[in-house]
Length: 396
Image (tube, rainbow, N blue to C red):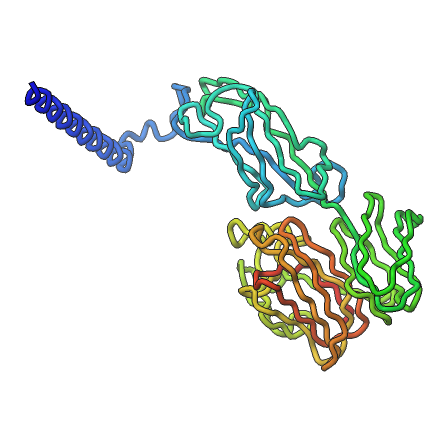
């Protein structure tokens, strides 16, 4: 009896193996036939007559953008955000899948009625939930959206949504940070459309940090020869250690970008660009390197940013003194979130400023020391990850 069972088992295995080999041979034959193409020219451009789902997939996407102007609508001033986590839930509230937005701002979820591996493979109500970073706000007020997916037998993947999720705008929480010298009687005023919104007496020999409301568009510091004025951007501000003798409010500012260095995706910044000497700084298209969130989110103008080559210390300067007003600084990767940049400024052989700036790959920090005269600026990072630079503003 045992011998009979064993023979039957072996026979079944042989048959299964033979069937598998036949199936493989048929698939290979079909693949070769498809590779050869169709010899009949009359079907080259024939209209489709049999509308049924294919075995392909479509991306059903949630789009996330940096709401630069803060109006809650995706417009020309805004920029796609990379690295933002989006989660998908089914109609029972069960977690289905998560994805991060790519360099174009899209978090993609595969949809197919024929592929059970697809995140969306059957009709129902789905919820797309954008994970808002700590301290940020969803300015579009739609970071949780429900979308109905229905059967569509004649469509490419057999399913169709009632519409894609609406674009989700995110805006960073803005603060103004800095440090004061040992003795000060200075005051920081927050302005909005020329009107005083609030004022703060600055402590002596201490760090300060104040939140900025959505209406704030300028900060003014007065007293103890620390006077300065800064137009605010959409991003948090770090003034560094407040130094006496800052740039005059009417100084002629020059924004140094990196879009006109090369038409290629990547190039070392050459000495002579903007009249300066450069060391270990590369210019790169924001989407040249895949999955590099900070290169995308740290880009605030044009399509190119600069970064510290291989995470090594980088410098720019020249023999004649120039004013160092500000620069946008970001971390290159989400994996280096919280990296600390050390920015050191020299006037010839004298170190006149040294500031540590905590970086994020989600948005830049507007570092604005507003130094009247420097000859060399050195940027390094504590853990040797790349720092991203954009919109370097100088007086030259």
